[in-house]
Structure formats: structure tokens, C-alpha cells
Amino acid sequence: MFLSNLVNVSLIRVELGQRSTKELLSNQQPTTMSQKLYVGGIPYSSTEDDLKNYFAEAGEVVSATIITDRYTGRSRGFGFVEMADEDGAKKAIELFDGKEYEGRKLTVNIARPREERGDRQAA
Image (cartoon, rainbow, N blue to C red):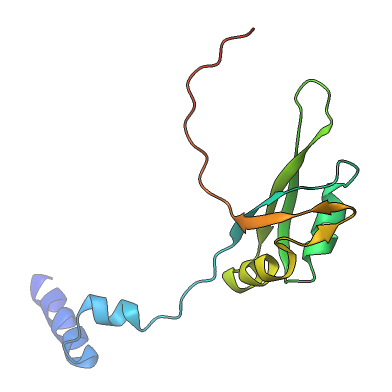
């Protein structure tokens, strides 16, 4: 059994031409990952569907979320749009950052990871 495994490994090395794993992995096609964008200045009357439809001009939109106040349920005027790939995200930033949308100036940039916050005390 050990000898047959050793022969198989040797055959693989010959077929691969002694290339390293790093070389093999570098030849693979890159996987496309979605890219989350922060969007500020969203009109308070806008819905997530409105936002999704607006950003679809830049590329495929995976999701759109508008952040709401936990007590009133009203929009806080910002949210996140997840684009299907990096190219769509870059195009969205180029198209929409600093542009007026329904009377408000949008801020669009790559979303940063959420920072850890300490426990909040109720007032």
C-alpha cells in the first residue's frame, strides 16, 4: 500500500513538472467576491428597493440595507449596498459618490469592518 501511494505521488510530481503548490495556486482564476459599500446621505423617504434599483446602474446588486432607528423604525439616512464584484463597487463609487440623489448628496465608499463597541449603558 505504501509503495503504491509513493508511486502515485511520484507520478503527480512528474506530470506537474516539479512545480510548487504556490505556482499551481497562482495560475488559478481569481474568485469574484462581493464588495460592501457604505452609503451616506440616503433620503429618509428612500426604501431598500429604491437603493437597490439605483445602484443596479453600476452592476449587479446583491443586497441593499438602510439602517433604521431601533425605537422609531425611521431611516437614519445611511446604509449599505453589497455589489456582486469589485468592478461593480468601483463603478458605483465613481458614479454615485458626491452625486445628488432625491435632494441629498450621497457619500459612497468601501465599507469598513464594524468596530467592537463596549457594552452600552441605558440612559
